[in-house]
Amino acid sequence: MLLNRRTFAIAVLGLCTLLSIVRNFTSQAGQVTSTLLIGGSKIDVTIESGEMELSQTELLHWAQSAAEAVATYYGRYPVPRLQLRIIPVGGSGVRHGQTFGYDGGLIKIRVGKQTEAREVANDWMLTHEMVHLSFPSVADEHHWIEEGIAVYVEPIARIQAKQMSGEQMWADLVRDMPKGLPQEGDEGMDHTHTWGRTYWGGALFCFVADVEIRKQTHNRKGLQDALRGILDAGGNITHDWELTEAFKIGDRATGTTVLSEQYAKWKDKPAHVDLASMWKELGIAAEGKSVRLREDAPLAGVRLAITAPAASKKTDLEISPTAVFAGRASAASRPRS
Ligand SMILES: [Zn+2]
Image 1 (cartoon, rainbow, N blue to C red):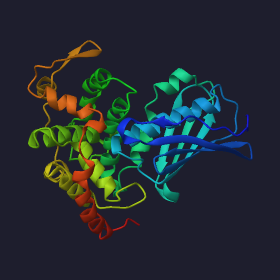
Image 2: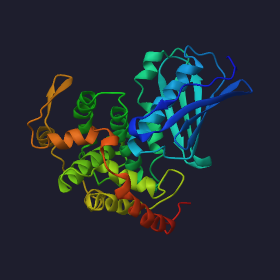
Image 3: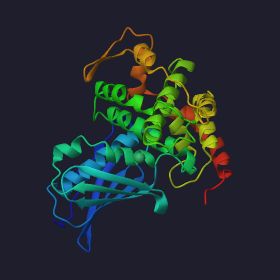
Image 4: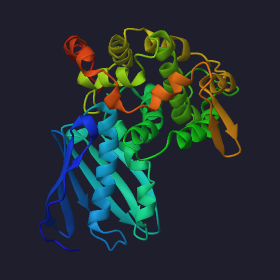
C-alpha cells in the first residue's frame, strides 16, 4: 500500500460544525494507520495488511461517513478517542463488527478483500458499531438495550446525515420489527435472550419509547434527546452503569418518565405492541417491499420528527442543566466487575 503523507479536505456537517480530517499515515508491520478528527474526537483507523480492492481512501471515506452519521445524531462523537481496526478477510462485503469499551473504545470490523466501493457506501454495520460507543455498558441481562439502540438509531443517524432515505428505513422497520415481538414463553426483556428479542425486541423498545415521548411532549422531545442526555452525562461504552440510572437520566432530558416506566413494564413480562396500529397512526402503509408515507395520518408529524435532521432540534441548551445533575448521579453508580 502507498504510504505517502496526505491531507484530505474538510467535511462540514451542517450546523453541527463537526470537522473530519484525515491527518496522517504511518506504517507498522505492514499496517496502515491514519487519524480521522471528528469534532474534538480522534479515530485511529488501522488497516491491517492484506491486498484489497478498496483503496485506503475509500476505506477512510467509509469510516468517516459512519462517524459523521453518529456524530450528527448525538451532536458529537461518543468517545474522545477510538481505535478502529479494519481486518481484510476473504470474499466480499462488510462481515463482522465488534465493539469494545476498553482503551477508550475499540472497534474491529472485517471487510472482504473483494468488497467494492458501492458495497461500503450502503453499509450499515460500521454505523451500528459506532452507535454502541454512545451508551454505557450495562449488566449482561440488559444486553437487549445495547443492541436495540444500535439497531434503531443506526438508520436514523444515516438519514439525518443524508446517507439514506426515510422511506427505506420505514420499509425495513415494517419488515423487521415483528421479529422483536414476544413469542410463546417470553419472560420479558431481561430474561428472554433470543436473537429476535435482543436485537429487534430492543429496537422495538426504543421505537415504542420514541413515539411515546413524542406524544407526551407534543413532539418537542424524542428518544434522541434522551440518548443525548445519557451521553452528555458521561454514559459512553467505557463506563459501567445501572440501566435504571441511565433511563432516569434519559427521562430527565425529555421531562418524562417514559423510559423508566416502559422498562418496569417490559423487563419481566412480554409486553404487547400493536404494530399494525402504530404504522397506521404514523402514516406508514406497506406496498409490497416498499412503503407509502401518508401526511394526513394522526401521528405523521411524529414520524417526520423521528428522522428530522438534528440541526433543527433545539436540544443542547435545554440538556445542559441535566448533564450537570447526571454527572453526579453517574459517579454513584455501581461499576461492573
Ligand atoms: Zn451490535
